[in-house]
Amino acid sequence: MENVAYNWLSELVERCMVQVGEHSSSYGTLKSCRMHDLMRDLCLMKAEEENFLQVVNLSSSNISNASPMGKIRRLAIYLDEKADQFVPPRDEAGGGHLRSLLYFGPNDNYWTAKRKELIIPSMFKDFKLLRVLKIEGVELQEEEEDLELPSAIGNMVHLRFLSLRQSSIKSFPQFLGNLICLQTLDFRVQNDEIVIPNVIWKMNRLRHLYLPWRYRARGKLQLSTLGDLQTLDYVSSGCCDLNDVAKLRNLRKLRIRLESRPWKNLEKILEAAGSVLNGIRSLRLGNYMESGAEEVMQQIVARCGQIYKLTLLGSTLELPKEFHSYSNLTKLDLWKCHLKDDQMAKLEKLPNLKSLGLWAGSLGENTKLLVFSNGSFPRLQFLELFNLEITEWRVEEGAMPSLCRLEIKYCLGLSRVPDGVRHLTTLKELTISEMPREFCSKVEEGGEDFHKIQHVPSLVIRNPRDD
View 1 (cartoon, rainbow, N blue to C red):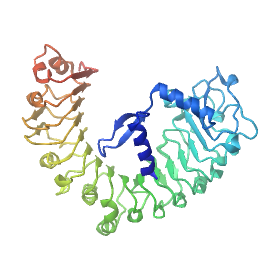
View 2: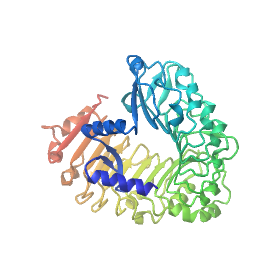
View 3: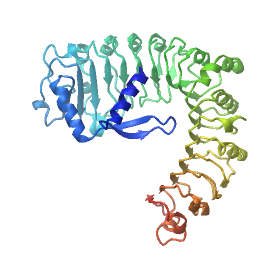
View 4: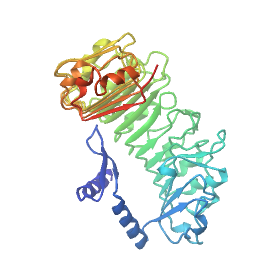
């Protein structure tokens, strides 16, 4: 199903009807797209003519002029903080025909409601045949209050897509287990203390499941029935059983948060899940244990030899022995891994790595010198250094021969740009953010290091620091 949709999107791009916003550095596929304003206006006009879609802008200034809802199937509602109701006027038969309901806040981002009753309206009882419901980024003015989902959503048994991302939701209600046709559930809400009941197993048609960064569970969450699942983000070691992962044969994107070590017979579990882990294309591992998870991190990564994208958060120390031969890996981000000094030799040999992010604590605690040797990172196109405690960075001639974009941010101990940057002839964009003002002045025109970067077409300096 996803492949068919992607092929249609690609054809629209080829016909210049849709513009490419961003390509994925991991897969080379389309990551985001946009539409020219003239094409958008044409599509909206045709959509209204064919009664395919209705777009409504709700605010206190125009709600009285909003057209009543007719027998439409797809409705997109734009709101602002001044909106004093949640839906436009509608006739008696309007809600029963609706299949898709999308809400957008100011600038398609977060929006804040003045009263809770505006966000949780009784009108949901009229939309029992909905297939798509998107209510993202909803907050209340009262900071201490959270939203509670109406029980009417539990009656929308035809729902395929439900997104509540970044909304201030109070709880994960039991009745969500009634949504047995759901294929995508995005529950990455703002509440870090949310408790999830063991009802997700009932949604056995799920293909993409997004859970909060932190959550608790009533007992262990059962996931083994989700045989069609392709995305699992996040699975918590304290709330879920890793044995269930071995039964998710279609899994391609996996996010794991290590909070405790409840897994007995880890070797047997990983052996059983070997074929599943080998099929993972995107892996994110977060280590939030006080100690003892480094080995777990290493063993899981070792089983995911076909990954394209890898993010490691938390103490890792060492990478698998064969990590340098991960030929599919194109994007790697490291944060607080405290890698030993010899691990950089494995990273720089990755044959197809295109994007590398070295963030705070990714290097060893005593690492003050960062060296990129001759021939290292042959395919790297984007490099980000953020909040590293290094005092010197050395780039040898022949390193990173394909680098296009370089970002240095908040590396306060770094006093100058490496001499080797002048050999990066492919470099098109250099961004320096939150760096000492003295560092920034050196790379500006007339500065003592300007000759190193004068070949770079775009130099961006943001927020120089005086401290």
